[in-house]
Image (cartoon, rainbow, N blue to C red; front, side, top):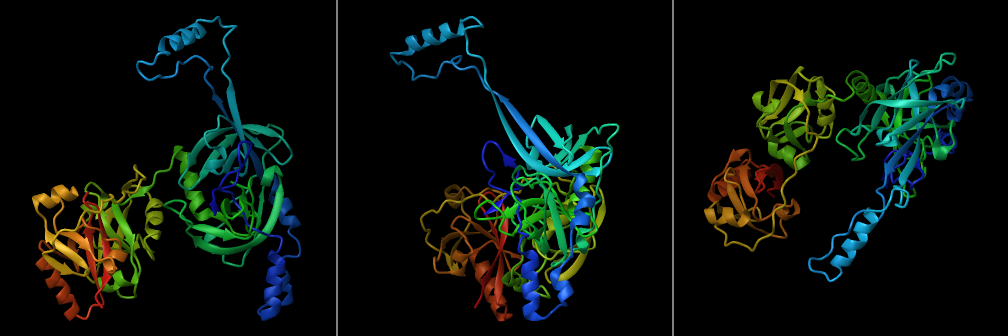
Length: 507
């Protein structure tokens, strides 16, 4: 179970916690090296001691106490809604009106409900700037930062970003007690196997130090659109949320945010937001109080091997396939089209569709960037001026009900196909703007069924050529077979007009 960053709470344990295991890290590494003989005994043992490093940075790590107080309504003030004509209506109305007319001293007082959570954070500026996880503070109306020496400082929120799960706070340091700050390091230089330490407040045990290694980089745990986590086995538990992950130079290269755990405790698989991602977000939160992300205006999907073959991509599956273009977005005005595969954005290679949202979001709004796409097998470059992302929600394909089968006019690829008629538009609620060939039945044993094509959807393109009749579909499929293509790429529209690409084998 993936858990969000693990702040401890007085209400209930969080489903998401930040965890990694360190107790056996050095032992496991030493054992592996001893067996394989890949490193010297000195390297196998790891650092002699981490005490000096921990002493160097501990004062910059803080505990976060966040309290949320909700005022409850006074009981007995509101008459419950009763069924019309109930014989007890007059009795209830009289009872509640009498309670409402009681004197102030006789009526029950509203009760407030208070919930507390504990997490971690760290100071990045001695003037009083503190970083933590957004979920640690949530909607709290009272936040305290507790220093390593026990000093409590009231904090205000500068800004927060739920998408990366970060928040920036400000405290006012005491005049005679300057704060200790720690710098960010370069997370891009970290490699699997590099040593790291985590310091935080697990289960309320402030100032706890654990050690481990970087297990992997670039992890996508499907917690949001910009996943790019560092995975570590340094022990992280509930309450470590928002705490720093340090390299051996005492620089913050990650912010502990989530764990993978069947129990909610540390099993050695923890995740941290890399400093390369966090620092950009933090800079914007400090400057604007919000995050201003770049916007391209496309809906994308991943490229699998069958799709790559159908598109004639050299080098196999790669890039982000454009499945939809916002009519008012930057991509539209720049000439990007449905069916283009974005392979490079602003000089950065796009390995898969999950890379593109993160790359675009981190690019400044208004910047003119070069976008390299593959269109019908040929590479071309487009110049795009990025807009600002205002609506973070991804469009979703509409659900289409499964109707009774329609007598087929043509059959291809395991699909019964028909031209669009007024009756079919009504039956499947197909928008007038959708053009193409209607799927009226899907062979349950076909690849098309495996790819979740459903009756009521519309084939718009076959092999990147528009189709308007079932005969167009079969003709284009036969043509691709003669070209010895192993698969055909379909552009399929839902009744609502949202489209997606589906690659179906021709063998």
